[in-house]
Every structure is written in C-alpha cells, then in structure tokens.
Image (tube, each protein chain N blue to C red):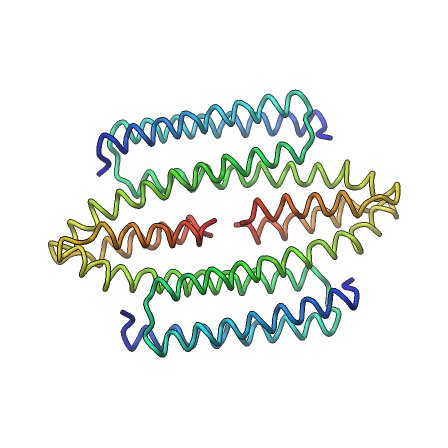
Length: 89
Length: 89
Length: 89
Length: 89
C-alpha cells in the first residue's frame, strides 16, 4: 500500500523520468556526444532506482509489516527478497 | 557518432521506455501491488541499460576507434572508463 | 540475528568467494585473457550479491520483524532501505 | 594484455579483497549487526568493481586498440560489450 503523499511523490518522480527520457531522445536526434548521452542515461537510471527504493520502503512499512504482525511475515519477506534480487542483478 | 540505423533503434527503445513509465504511473494511480510495480521498474531499468550499452558500443566503434587509429586512444578510453564507472556504481 | 544454519551457509559462501579471488589472482599471474578474468570477477560479484541478499533476508526476518512487532519498525526499515540504497548504487 | 604495473596493482587489490572477506567471515562468526555486515559486503563489491574497471581499461588499451589498428576492432568491441553487459546486469 502506497499512501497519498507517497503516490504524489512517485508520480512527480516518474513524470520527471519521462522528461529526462525526452531529453535523451533530443540528444540522440541532435547527434550529441555519446559520453554526454551516457551521463544522462546514468541519471535516469539513478532516478528510477530511487523510485524503486521508495516503493520497497512503502511495501515494507505496509504489507510486510502487517504480515509480520499477523505472524505471516516470512512469505512476504521471501517475495520481497526475490524482487530485490532481480532488481540488483 | 551514432549512425542512422542505431539512431532509429535508440529512439524506438527510448519511446518504449516512456510507454513503460506511463504504465508504472498508471499502476501507482490504480494502487497496484508494490511487488508488481517493482517488477515493472526493474524492466525499465534493464531497458535503459540496453540503451546505454548500445551507445557505449557505438562510441567505441566510432570515436574511440578513430582516436586509437590517430594514436590518441588513451584519453578517450579513460573518459569512457570513467563513464562506465559512474554507470556501474 | 543470523541463525546457525544461515551462519554456516554464509561462511561456506564466503570461503568460496575467497577461493574464486585466489583463482582470479592466478589468472592475472598467468596473464590470462582479460575477458576471461572479467567473467570470473562477474561471478564473484554475483556470489557476493547472493551473500548480501541472504543477510538482508535474515535481518528482515529477525531484527526488522521484531521491531515491527514492538511497533518500532519504521526506524529499522529506514536503516535497511539506506543500506540497500548504498548496495544498489 | 595487462602490463607489470597493472598486474601488481590488481594483485594487491585482490589481496585486499580477500582480507575484507576474512573480515566479513569474522563478523559473521562474532554475530555482528547485519547492517554492519552489509556495509562491508558493499565495500567489497565496490572494490571488485574497481578491479573489473581496471581490467576493462587495460583490455581496451591493448587488445581492443590493437584490433582496431588492424581494422578488426568490431569483433573485439562486440565481445567487450557483451562482457560489460553481463557485469552490469
């Protein structure tokens, strides 16, 4: 569960990511220097990582915590760890 | 230097990335399960990595290769390695 | 808290990591092909990621879960998220 | 090809990595706090990344550059990009 403040924060971050991708598309069109394009891609990648970390944090504070309190945490923790594994890889 | 075929390929990949981010925004709005959102973010991150690798490859085949042939490769290689370093980190 | 089975598992994984690093050192000494060395480094990096994920999972199942049950989860979750952030980056 | 100075540098970095892994094993034995163990794993991972980047740089300055000068760069660049792809993922 993602609360309203987090929802707003995520939406504005994702909106900015799209703006950054627009910027990269313009750089490709304008035949900008590859290294500069790569720096922009790195920035977008980092922005996405932050979004993912926010979602993970929310998930732990809501679903995982609720499951833990209902003595059913293990399954939720396993599911989250597998998701982090795929993300990290 | 990015040739025309690569340019077209990058633009369509970046267009798809924006579509994927739209999809994530819809998932956030619809309060979809955090784990599903995280899988989608992982997919976008991976798509961006592929774009970065394509740009790196182009850069090596053009700018870096030209510099190497003009006996001036070291500086370009150093610049690229620093960029990969930031990307990997 | 890491239980005894996990401790044993982590120790044997870390022992293997050292063996793999020994192997890389031998490859460097023997002037093996750089690409082969890089594949080995990738394997060690992946092995370390698995160790980290095991430790994260243990931490969630013990410390974080206990904190959540004592209604004090938020601080522990924040601490873990910051650690994952540094790991991912 | 890795020159002698680089060889020495890599060996000392890899030696240090093994020392760091020893340290993590001791932390596991001593049941140290998971978050502290994770910080140490992050440090080793970063150290390994630096070794990989050094090897990549060497490879570009020697094998890849030679191939480029013999008008046979494309294959070596493709091979390196696939290796970076596996490393990044």
